[in-house]
Figure 1 (cartoon, rainbow, N blue to C red):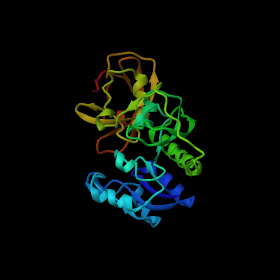
Figure 2: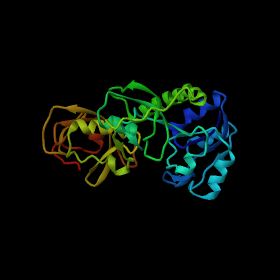
Figure 3: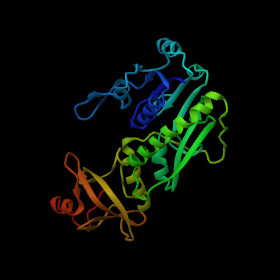
Figure 4: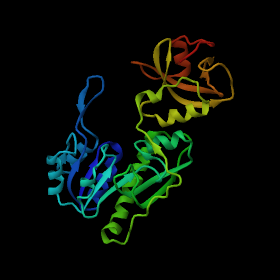
Length: 306
């Protein structure tokens, strides 16, 4: 098939490589423009771009697809299909209608559950034991198109968003390559999503990682996994930001945010129950085991973190 690939972050890379390795004709790779990142605010390319260049593929990074220039670029490719994997922008109807086989999306959940920008994190936040990937025919809605194929997987008890996302990206890439022949031949038709069980998950914001402890301990443990690696779970101690890592539930009680134990682990009371934190990191410093952090920062039982 002649394909234009749309994708930006790490999640999209396995699908791009899988299409290339399967022998599909990649007419171009569309991605987000480079953006300032890190303390130095140096321009950083999306993860897909260096891979596309390594494979010798033409790249296109428009600020928007709404211009006539962008539309003309896409139209000139005369693609059989557009494959879209975590591109990061909504495709308007006139773009969706360009390729003869439509726009095919790899989505990191079992649709219709967790439509939207953060399906991997949403599954962890909900405490789900299972998630998966879906191959979908895109329409004008938010992940509402018919589904060609799905594949499920169990979520590890301590699996983080970073680890789960990497697994789903590889699963999605393999399922995409297996599904495309049926789409091309017409033997595989997209199945409309049922309205039952449909949920929407928003984009993750940096402030979502703020732990105030005025919520159940079980939810904080889920957040620590869902927000790893970004934005991380953090709180404030005496006005200074502290990242919390490797959390576990503890059957203790106290006023939310109160340090109940400061030794080999740091135990903090929540609205319901408590969490034991095994590793912490003050802003601008390296991560430390709880015991080392407690000694070095002179953490005392009874102090309150917010």
